[in-house]
Amino acid sequence: MLSTQGQEQNREKILILATENCAYPGANAVGQAHSSYPANTYIFRVRSPVMFPEKFYMDCFAKGIGGIIIMSCGEECPYHGAYNALARRIDRVYQSMKSRGLDLRRLRLTAICTVCIRAFLKEVNDMSHLLEELGPPALEMEKHEAAAAAQSQAEGKM
Image 1 (cartoon, rainbow, N blue to C red):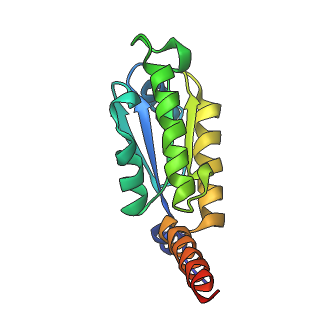
Image 2: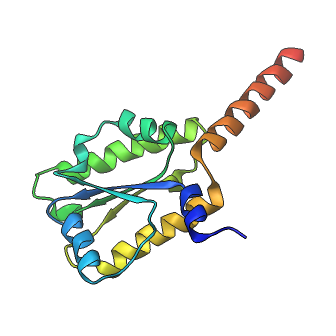
């Protein structure tokens, strides 16, 4: 039987990009309420997630981050046009993920307010359960590459 500690070590990491004006205070509210969430969660306070290029997300998956939740202010972002630019960028990241065989559910864009404790916990717990189901992103990419190689080889024999 595995201990809880051993299970925590084998869980996929969840990276949260939390905007400093909305989602990060929401994460703080979770802590002040003494609510708990999976220990495999890493919260990174950011001014605006639009600052991160598409390559950042793919590099995270390549380096073993199992899932990324972008918790933003949504349309209420204090930086004019930032949320719409972020949404367009994430659409492009989804295309990159698809081309590499990554499940698109590994990346989630959501709006979290300063007091959204339940919403914060739901997002983190949902991602944690999803990652238990999917396993490491490297396995998905390897399966995709193997399938592509097999298809290429089969086409070469014809």
